[in-house]
Image (tube, rainbow, N blue to C red):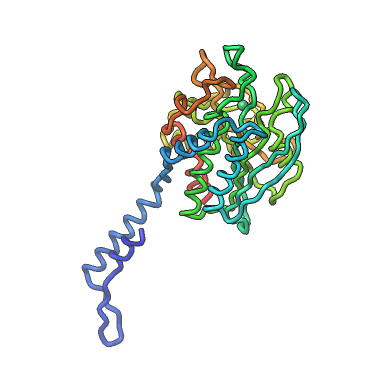
Length: 328
Ligand SMILES: [Zn+2]
């Protein structure tokens, strides 16, 4: 853009103190404003690098399972912190404790928070959970059910998109202030007790460490190679306007994964954000992994091979365009 503006700047002939614009320069000027007008009508979509996001997914999985207390968990926390520190204005921890119901063990947990343009008058938020489930309790093989999952999709995928968004925000400052929260303790829950899940989001909402954002967009299970993202029901209840804006934008951007229908209700990090802090939060989630007949959710099949860069690219393209185009 800079280069075009320079070459199209009119040439001036200065005669006796007056400025005379040559015919050639005038023609170029008209062309310049015509181009400007066209760009105004059809703003170019923001490019999001799905391959880079996929590398962030693989890097997290290379640490092994990231369930609280494990070696992979500690190493991944350092990796996420160091990665975000390269790009964010500020990165800090929000520590908390949780006594998990299945074994009665108490864990020291950490939400990782990165802020961009913290001084901006308008503030929004993106979230994803970075911890992975300690038990593959949905695995068809009973032998596997007490072992931790790798969490390529359930954990790493949402974080991967947000890391690439952070890299993008470092190169091009966002039009509003953005807080990225990587929640801990999302997946320590026991079935039938929703309050035992999403503990990091609950702690964040009950102890807001940043000015309350206008809304939040949460990403979870967005890496499925067969990506289909319907509208999750709590999201529609909590923030119908944002849901409509996002899914309309997905249609305009021709992102086929986004399906214009209401589907399941998922208790995820977006629910405590609304319940405890009235942050109207939306969850972008594909719970049918890979499809309605089979589900790798909370099994040993939640691995990078069942995820794809193309899927991360669709979700990243939507959030990046929402941020840079809708919020401009
Ligand atoms: Zn999970």
